[in-house]
Image 1 (spheres, one colour):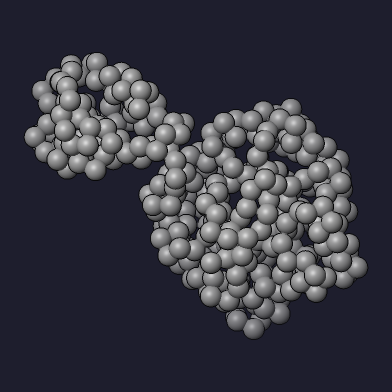
Image 2 (spheres, one colour):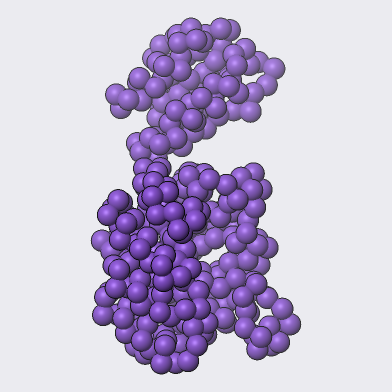
Length: 345
């Protein structure tokens, strides 16, 4: 089990539930737009928000976002230690910075002391495109162990100044390398791990790569917080992250939808119906398994573990709970019947 790192009113690691993160993609200069997106992300179920802070002027984002949302806010910083110090002063909840990239040791010490005094953790993030020359030379490229060595190198720079409230991320766009790197990290350190496939891609391929990479590790019991990196609206990242947690069996809330692939017995528009159910329940926080099945003969039995579901017939559908049929309704009414029943559960 990883060690526990306190983040605002919650904890990362130490057996705590896995959290879903996302990152604002509105230009840092657009404070109002950033705040609006942060609010939307929180409503969608995002549990940690990261914002790029590219310069000192952008530090003004931090208090503006913190006033608008209740979830922790992370400042993403590269190279300039002064931005980290100003972000701490502005009340940020967590810093994302690589100590080896901010210059001489006195700067690292100053950042470490500022974060420790404020009770703010630091996430160290390495990926296959940011490894140190000496590590690349040693391993001949960005191998999984090279990624882990880089992360531990940065962690040691903080440990030198008695700072250990650290979270590590070790990302690669190559899914097998990413999986192997995190497995090695879990063997070699007890710092909490932030999982993700870097530069995963668009909604379709990015989700698939993230599901394979993040999902594999979660099924191994590895990972304390996740981000699904997509070239898309960050809201999609949050929903994808929640779905991956449910698919891996580690989520504690939210609807899980199961549906059949259709066949020659299907006599209702199941594809459309399943899509509508998924859309309508996207933000439902109830812990339910909902089935949308196409066959009234096998549907209830095949989805017996579902809390509630529907099974199609000829222009009609059965409503069932725990595999037991409780009613029959016309096809054009069944969606609303299902939603109303879920609302009462």
